[in-house]
Image (cartoon, rainbow, N blue to C red; front, side, top):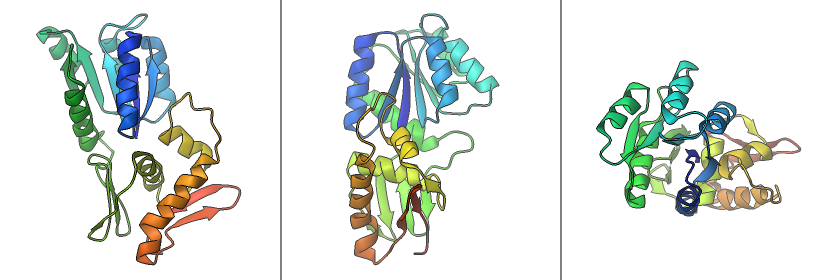
Length: 224
């Protein structure tokens, strides 16, 4: 799952990104409102964590402009401690949730998962491809009634494929969804995770739902 964090306190941003990465999230960071607005418009995110007090363009303006552009990505705004007016304005401008600073990372993670579970206005919660169910809120995967244990990065790759069932998804698209914006490693890492997924979601069930389209990418289908 991919998250955009718009936060001008660089140390806090780095700490949050590090923690979320350990949970399997790919996190892009913007340190001002203009950059955050641009990234949110250029990329597909599962959620946006947006500070109120930002240079160049504050969080309220970013949130308002995204909603005016019909971008319904779930937004959690970070407000000042005991800032009841901040909280009210955050909701009035279109945010889905808010969290007051200073905050507990455990609470941030739980609230973020709940936000993703609720999803945007047009986004389903659990993704179903045949009898394969991919649930981003609980980070679980099931085939029929069997739970399939996946690593956080395996889940991120599967989630990106499940969002586009029956379509060919390129390596570049998978990297964009499962790794952060700054990743510059070997794209062939995708092959490693796809192979691992086949061993877990297909082989034990006698399926071939995850296939390679030579020279184009990968496709996840139902009923195979």
